[in-house]
Amino acid sequence: MQFSKRASARLLQSALLVTFMGGLAGCEMLPMETSSRPVDVDKQVDLTSCNADVPNFAESPCMLTDWVAFGLAAQRGDREWRDNMLPRLAGHAPEQRLSRAVVMSWGSESQWDQASEIYKADLGAAPGALQPLFRYWLNELEGRRKLSSRVDQQQGEVARLEEENEALADKLEAMTAIEQSINLRQQVE
Image (tube, rainbow, N blue to C red; front, side):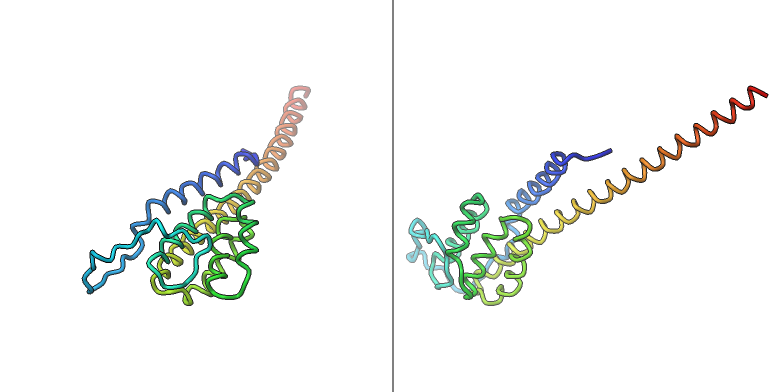
């Protein structure tokens, strides 16, 4: 049984879709920040003003909302959007590096490794309120990397089994020819 490239691509897409859907359903898994302070109802934040194109670590009521929106934009964005965004995120500051990691984590598989390394290196530099979000994104990325690796391994195993099957079929054909030759000799004698 040989998988075509289209079938392999569909298998990978299916695996990524399952991971994505699990990610959407797993938002409740993010740790909730508990506070012993009473919530002041009079200080409600107008979240409609939270729309930074590129988020930062400046403490504000919009910080988490801006990062979540940026993550969703990276996820929904196409290659052109990511290619345009990455130069804007050049720099060595942790917030720039983590922004790049968010964008690269939705890029090509070759960018996934870089994104993972950045998340691991700079997660501790993020404000405490953002660390669970970055940890969640890192875990989601690692899950996709494992699925991709598993697909590659399975494709290699399928190719090996196909070669083994072909070799066994050739041997069976040769043995059948030998058996027919022996049977013909016995009939002639």
